[in-house]
Amino acid sequence: MTTVTTLTAMQQQPQAAQKDARQLVSFSFYHLDLSWRRLPQAVRSKQAGELLSVVTISSKRLMVLAYSLAGMKADVDFLIWRVASRLEDLQAMSAAIGRTE
Image (cartoon, rainbow, N blue to C red; front, top):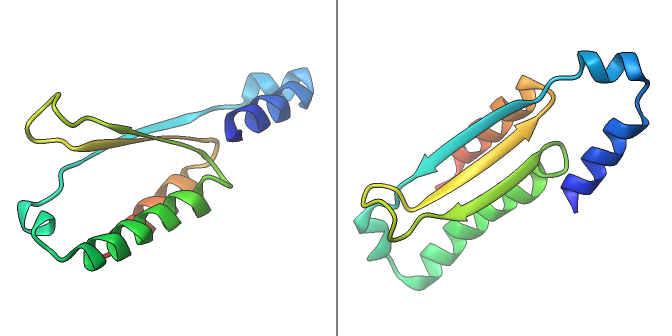
């Protein structure tokens, strides 16, 4: 849904603005610590909910896609792919992720 909105907004911009428009792309890879997997389900759900909240809020300002990489590489569990037009939006999301438990 967010992708369609972004593309529509880009299509409505004047031709000159589209030439100057840029996209910043970020790929962040995450590995879940084995000790996290041993936490009680209630704690894991709360912490996963915090991350989901950050992704949901951030997806209003930038395109956010998440992919599971389970079984593909031993040291990575999931990837968050982000596309933004402003560096500050990427930085704000990274900071918000860093503040989660």
